[in-house]
Every structure is written in structure tokens, then in C-alpha cells.
Length: 267
Image (tube, rainbow, N blue to C red):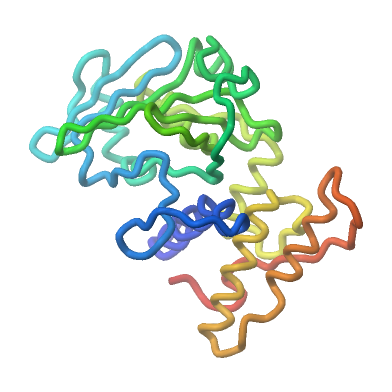
């Protein structure tokens, strides 16, 4: 993937993560640049000094020493080397949906329940992140979401519940066991991931997560405005297309949302 494509993907990941906040019309914390803070653990890689990864009954502590990731307790050299390669994907830990007011004790979310995240996590998956000030955050992975496109997650001291991607959990497992790990992707996740990677420029919206559909439409609208063509009707079409989702009333024909490059090239 080219540098431009990777940059574009990171923009889309951020937008997708912010989708429930945008769709719900809720206010959100600023990230310091006026944007919506969509991170479960909002620490960029350059501010991380240590991280601890737990999965399959193993915990690997990795520290930054003289600008180099170095294995500590339970970690292998390979784990530290891998982290230097994927650190910008791992940090900050973003969510593709953020929910407030949920009862995290409800067993459906899998918090505090051994093996809730599945056999690949073993007793459980978690990550702790420490920044240069010594502050530490811990994220615990819960059960897979109902559509198998991600996992529930919670952060100690934060009342919100996060939906994080399979890739985030795969990275936690990778670092904990010291070798590259990948989930066999579900068809649902493949379609969402393809949209994020701009691999499918003409994805039908019934194939995608409705939040992703609306975010891609919002990006199309913004690109159209930048191109001097006006906002178009992308958002209206996206909103009507979600009525075809299971359980929706007044179902309408599903429209097609083109990839975000349709109005403007990668930035």
C-alpha cells in the first residue's frame, strides 16, 4: 500500500471511529485540533514509553529505551521488533464505535468473564499503556460483537464501552505471544476492512456497517464541497439505505455509496 493510501486509510479509520458520535449528534471532547476524540486510549506512539500485552495466558512487557522498543518481562525480542513495525497502527488505540450508559457488568459484553473473547485470547486479552508522565491506561477486551466485525472493550476508570476492530485484538495477541497473529476474517469484517482500504469503490451499502456507510457518505460530501460541486445528496442516500438493515421499517431500495476517492484523490 502506498504512503498516500496509508495516510488516507488512517483518516478514514478516524472518521469511522467517530461515526456514532456524528450520527448521534452528540458533543465530544476535542483532541486539541478541534476534531472529535475517538480514541479509547489517546496516546500517540511518540508519547508511549511502555506497553504490556496480555493474551493466551502470557504477558509481554515492552519498554522504550533510547528510542528503541526493548523486551522486558515476558517479552521476546521478536515482539519488540514487531512493535517497532506496527506501533503507528497500535497507538493510539481507536474505536469504531463509542457507547455511553451501558451496564458493563452485563455478561453479553464479556468483561470479567474468562475466555469471553474466544480461544485465540485464551483467558483474556488486555493492553496497558504508559506515557512519559507515568500515567497508565488499561484496556480489557470483552466478547466479540454480535456481527463478528470487532470486539467490545473497556478502559479502567472510563465509563464508556468501545467497539474495537479485530486488527487491534490481533495486534495485542501478536505482541503477547511474540509472533505475528491474524484472525481468519469473517465476511462482514472483510467488507468493512475493504472499504477502509479503499479496495471496493462501489460497495453496496447493505454489505457494510451502517455507521461506516454514513461516514463514507459524509466524506464524499466533504470532498464534493472541496471540489466546488456542492454537498450533493450522499448523506440523504446513506440515511435511506440503512432502512434495509434487518429489523428496519419502511425498507427502501439500497443505494450505492462510491468510495471516498470518487470526488477527490487521496490526500
